[in-house]
Amino acid sequence: MKIKSSLPLSATNLFLSLYLFCGSAHAQDKPATFTQVSVETSSSSLLDNSDLPDAPQAPVSGPVAEQEGVQTKRILGIFPNFRAVSANTHLPPQTVLEKFKTASQDSFDYSSIFLPAAVAGINQATNSTPEFRQGAAGYGRYYWHAFADQAVENYTVEAIFPVITREDNRYYTLGRGGFMKRAGYSLSRVVITRNDAGNETFNISEIVGAGAGAGLSNLYYPSRERTLGNTVSKWGSNIGIDAGTFLFHEFWPDINHKLFHGKQPSQ
Image (cartoon, rainbow, N blue to C red):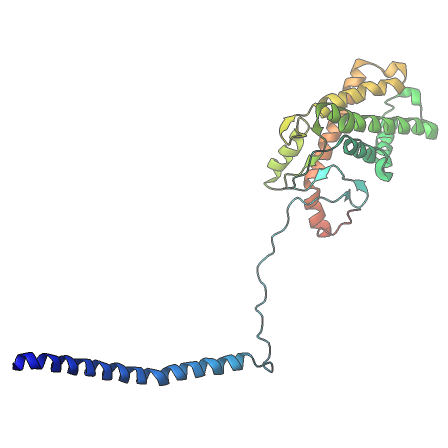
């Protein structure tokens, strides 16, 4: 009997003990919770105080990465650079009109007088075409022939053959790597170009177009100058000038950055 009556009593005592313990623990937790809330509320009110000075901002440190291979529309603000495309730039295919527009810009831009002027001076100094003679009149003959050569070659290489072969006449800047890598890339563009689909292909427009331009120029040169040797020589000169132009296109962004900090006017 004692055992039987002691079980409920023990259970009751255990329950009361647990209840009192939990109640005591709960009562002890309340001040701590109140204190924590009070501190947080006090901290929030301090942070929201508009009278406090602004926190000092950490200065931005570290070099800013330079954008590589950024082309301008003109070189030195004068010479046309319309065919050069900045590095890592993806453009839609050119239309027929855009190809002829590029050729026209390179042929009749206000700066297009400079290269023929230099070529005419060299040709006159070397007496390359004796029929033109010397003096101002002779220089004029050399000049307009050089200007016509430039325009004819521009249209055959940049417009007529790119339309026929569906090739892109623009120069896509590599803009990264060492000098030899970039120089090799730029010179290789004489024989490698992109088609309108964006894939690399043999540069028919440059090789065949430059030859066609040299052949067409025979139409307005004296008959004695219309030889195979002169035509091949002019063909090679056209390709050589274009190769040098590609090389300059590739490194113009670097020159522009070093000399003008990239602020050279683009128009």
